[in-house]
Amino acid sequence: MYEDFQTGGLAPALSGPAGRRACRDEESPFADGELFFSRTDPHGVIRHGNAVFQRVSRYDWDELVGKPHKIIRHPDTPRAVFWLLWDSIRRGEPVGAYVKNRAKDGCYYWVFAIVTPIEDGFLSVRLRPGGPLFETVQAVYRACAEAERAEDLAPEASAGRLLACLGELGFRDYPAFQAAALSAELRARGQRLGRPADTALEGFDRILEAAGALLEPTRTVTDACGLYTHLPLNLRIQAAQLGQAGAAISAISVNYSAISTEFAQAVERFAASASEVNRAVADGLFLLGAAHVQQEMAEAFGREAGAAGADAEAEIARLDGQRRTYSQKAEAGLVAIDRRVAAFRDDCAQMSRLAASLEVTRIMGEVECAAAAGAADGLAKLLEELGQFQRTLTEALRELSRRNAEIAAFSGRLIGGDRGDGPVPQRAT
Image (cartoon, rainbow, N blue to C red; front, side, top):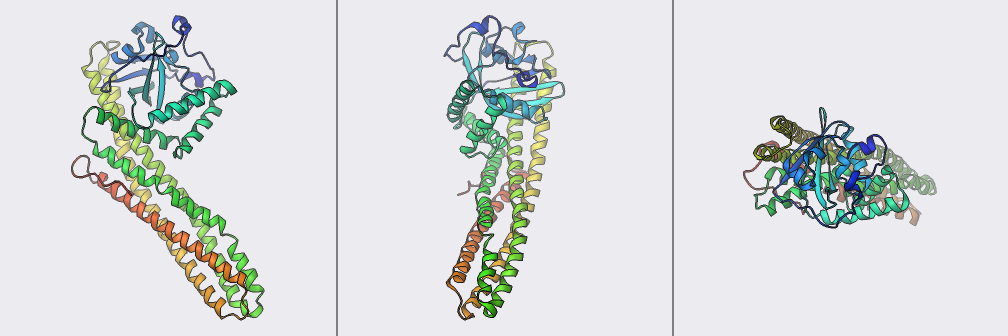
């Protein structure tokens, strides 16, 4: 699967007799409670797997071990997906994706795959998808695959289109999508299997929701700053037209302009801080979900008969090692979220102080405008525009403070050890 883009080649999905068979529109099924994995070397050559993988792919073990992972690649999965997978794992980052695979006899099977770099290659654990995003993703994949064929798109170009489609669905980037998708799949799978809700995952999910809600008011603030940058200059121009009567207003406009410049600089830091909070939350949620799946996979593999190769204990150790690593990273991610939330809170407080200074300056301008003889209607209109700007800022900053407090509360609960006892924090409204 991986070396398609490691080498830049676009090899056929299958080779040999299986590759010459027409793709059958029949599913190679596996149960909701089943997980399967495969391990490859750095070049994507299969080195190990479990019996479920062998059964669902319908290959004998000697047809799988030593073969490139792309032997199970289905042409309905856009090349964009594999480009995104490889782009992440070559940076040493875990990645998750919906993938449609093809069995030896041409049947298909869908998985949500969690691919993680390991010391001597890559490890991929797969579960049966059925969450609320799955149907939407299938439609997006069909459109992307058709565009690749019709326009002869390179994988990277197709990946750009896929990311644009995910953006239209509300995901700011691929890490945000994979975190939301894995969380949704684990929730849906747990419900299908009649399992109790995982409080830690649900808590992280609440944090992701609240963090995502930071983005819209952040955009409101940054957009408003862009729209109203002209107002201080126009205010000075209007004041100049009043001559001596407008001197006080001119001085006020200079002060307003200075505060606005400082405010604009704060906005840049503020927007970057909101993005950092979102990325930290998405990464933590994905790592926690991956650790859960890897733990269950290790336990299932330990019970499984007929695993490929003799060294099953080494494979279990790899799975468990990944689980421990990602659990620790998820815990560290909570601490990082808490730090970023605190920094964001400070940014919000600074923004609020600057906004208050702007409001005081604007009110002084209104007072001077009322007192100035012959004040023009244009000046009053500008001051009203400044008032609208202030109202926009105040509302957006209030919403940001509320959402930020929610994130702090959710992460504090999890840092404090709330993993399964007590109520899950209520979903934000």
